[in-house]
Length: 232
Image (cartoon, rainbow, N blue to C red):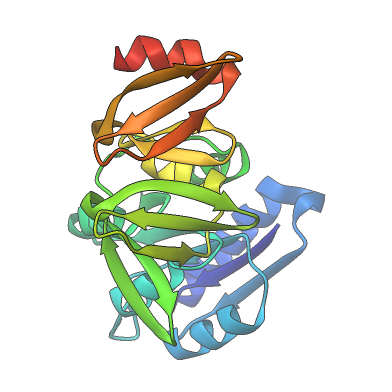
């Protein structure tokens, strides 16, 4: 695991670092602590990461200025903050977890477990997907996304307006964040439940989900029974 801690209070950063080393042990490949937003953004741009632990108040800078950038990346973001009233907004942006200060080792490990074991989030508050496009960060409302297709380590977002956008997160990571709104109906597809019109059975026991816009998306054979029970 490659982990970055973005925290301006040295005492808290050392505590997070100590707990993180204790939790991961030999599985920890790299652990970096940075205390400013700009330096953290430069580090993220030049290093492969699995998890970023982000405080939302950094020497007077607003962590939300960084949040739209980090949630567009391939890694998961876990917010560690005393500002509990900002938790809902953080989840809306697509963080994996929000750990309120003060916290203990068990709560931090719970957050890590969601990333390690690929547990689905318990919140259904995510409203935006941030994507990188032409050097800018664009926020795509979840309500505009019809389905998502895996494209290697990336994903393709298919939107209601007919456009397609590329996201740096894998299908597995987006499934964790979007499990309350989207179903994994195939190894390569996440589909918004509310957009499904019905199921079509084709010759050779091939199953397709028909969306309201007439798009057909394959349903994996192992997933057909669960999908049928949920939708029909």
